[in-house]
View 1 (tube, rainbow, N blue to C red):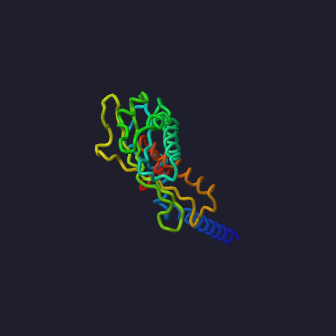
View 2: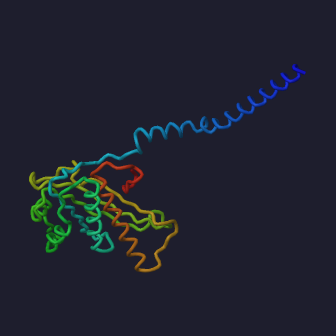
View 3: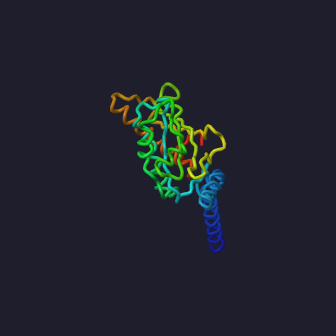
Amino acid sequence: MTTRSTSILRTERARRLAIGTLAALSLSAPLLSGGCNIVAAGFLLVHGPPRIEARHELQKERSTIIFVDDRANQLPTRALRDVIARSAQETLLAEGALSNVIDCKAAFSAVASEKSSEPMDLVALAKAVKAEVLVYAAIESFTLSQDGGSVSPSISMRVKVMDAALAKRVWPEEKTGSSVVSTSRTGQGFTPTSQSDMAKMEQEAAKQAGVALAQVFFSHERDSSGIKDQ
């Protein structure tokens, strides 16, 4: 009787051990198969999300103004220049990249009477509005679609930084400026059905372009970047 009871107990223990082993293996399988994901998650916890470094850092205390120029009339309306510049200055202030900003409307007022054949010198423009630094963005293009199907407004700019005290361009080395392209996707197959829809889409594209312009000057997460191909 004792021998039979002992045998039963051993059999039961073996069964439980087998079940426990199988359960442990089943739980560990996803961890083993997703080893790369675990390593990636651990990396993110330690280092944070991938970041894009600033192309050029502004001196935050110096008085700075942002001027968006559209001499070739690429934007649908001239008012969008103000939207881009205002979005950029608000983003720079919010991110702490600048603390002393001269409102962009001062620059637009200063060039209001200039002749298209005789644009105001950028250093002279900075001095006219009492700015030490001028961030200049020249609009190169505005397109509504990249593939002919979905609506994805894209604004391309050439950006440079002028120092009024030094009376010269301090960034970048290229005379033409640094290329910045902002692309926003409003939805596959989306088509504006009214002038109001179109205006809202243009406004949103301009705001995003302003954010992309600002992001040139501070480090930010790659996932939040508004700059195309970053």
